Length: 246
Image 1 (cartoon, one colour):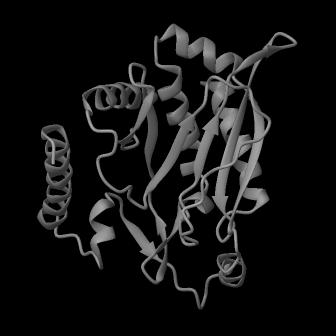
Image 2 (cartoon, rainbow, N blue to C red; image 1 turned 90 degrees about the vertical axis):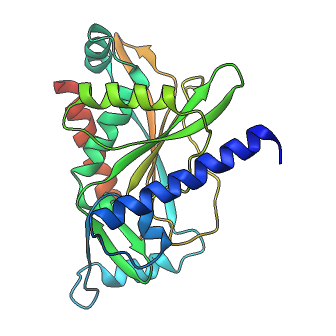
């Protein structure tokens, strides 16, 4: 094992140990190792009384239980405000879409062990490009009360993180992967083969001007056991409202 590889391995194990110790210190009960990587509280859903139980079961057994939708958003106002405050556009948009998704219950459901759970809050994970190597790292940042707080914390965390991957993602995140080099009309994702992976994925492409407005393609991939078209529609409306009123 080379020196750099050994260092990375040690850092990864230290990360795991630190997370476990945090859980122990807080006297949080977990049922498996997966639980050690989740920072947010949740409630277990009683499927016997849950209105969506039948729909969940049908889609859970599908060959491909996730679906992806691409739509356009108007970022004219958002872009102006972000530039005035000198925020990173990418980090500001991570906050905007994750804040909007957090406000819609359907996006906070997950499979955990043999249970269905609803998280009180979902945090963020985003890809961050190393321009020298053209390789990305996955950065985990908890949601904050304001965009300013989030952008500052996310920027600091991304810069300080040396490893490309710090460990397996928790169940309580939204995954964000910007692709600002292409104005696309459709996007697809790799499939891990894990049907119970219900973490929503958010992507966005290169923005452009149209009729005096700045438009950007955005995509959402979600697990159909929890999310239907109506919920995607709510997300689109909630996100556009936030972008307009920031």
